[in-house]
Length: 232
Image 1 (cartoon, rainbow, N blue to C red):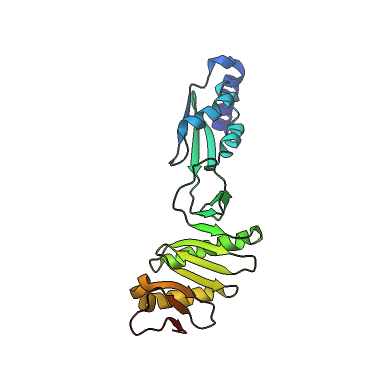
Image 2: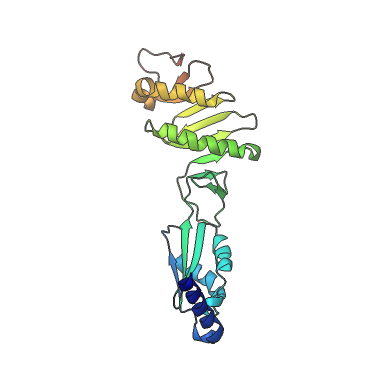
């Protein structure tokens, strides 16, 4: 307790007795791993708040202004004796597009970068705003389920009635309908390795709107198969 008190008194003495211009901030450092953020821009955003002495810098104000940048997920600011302000940033990670303007991070949160900074090739989630949370949760879950069998989800599109259509990166389209989408998806996951994977280049569309089966529309009819198969 005595040591803590002495340290506090020393800091107070420095703050009260040393002239303001005697402890200027000489350096603003930015740490983190960045793909979309620009360190120079971050430093420029912080400069108006560090043109004071070391102890008077408004750290919460810097956190607010940097936190408002579109690609910033988290930010913390601290003083490093005797003349440095360190800004540590966690950059947003985009895992999908929500509609045409917004992006989705791995935690199911929406953010909106400006300009042309949106990464290319992200999967798309599209649907009515009233179903946004349901579609986002389902996308994250479906993405992991399909990944387990080596497939990549390209888009999840839902309409106002609650009907879903999935598109996969390999070109397959899955119609899941309005009800029991998760159990219907399991029919596909179970059937894919043995029935569909070996002929995936010939499949045009898979209709999963059945209680205990699926239907395959073939782009090119395989030998010995009907154009449409149900319940396999």
